[in-house]
Image (cartoon, rainbow, N blue to C red; front, side, top):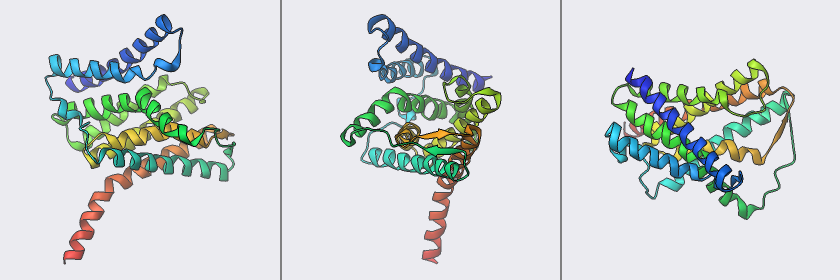
Length: 253
């Protein structure tokens, strides 16, 4: 019950912050999207209050400590995520499940700003909740593999409510499977780096991949390929430290 409670509290904080920003936007700014990044502020406040007065857990457990490695890890996450998604889209085009559209007309100098806005609007607050707060909360109660499984499945399950091009029960379920695979890659990044930044970069890649849009012909096939690419990338991230350690042992032998 404690594990289920931790999951439900995490989801409740996400919904509270999301609907809170929507209410602020509608009442004070006429529904403007400009205030969407405020969701990060609300999530930070909710997480701080819960961990301080209810959960009694240290802030350091969120693993958002600033360091020289923060930016490289975030960039690495974006590279890994973009490679998986664009690779899957390329295969989708190759098998006839999608077609390429002209690249988004975004001035190059605006891309860094777009990355920051996307991170504040969606990637950072969601990663803070699932790969930060929930991951840390469950780490005292479950094995690392179980923590990865629970955070991944809980993150993916909420995407049944997401707006997407998916239509029909089958495509909506495949969209959830794709979100689960994304959560697995984000969790793998959190597990292997010990920090939140690479997972934020991976999450950002979902939105940045839209700079190279596709027109779906069979969206279900495209979702399946994206889920497979993200899952394989997660396996690679999880395997990397072991492979590196084995290589070092062979070099010393």
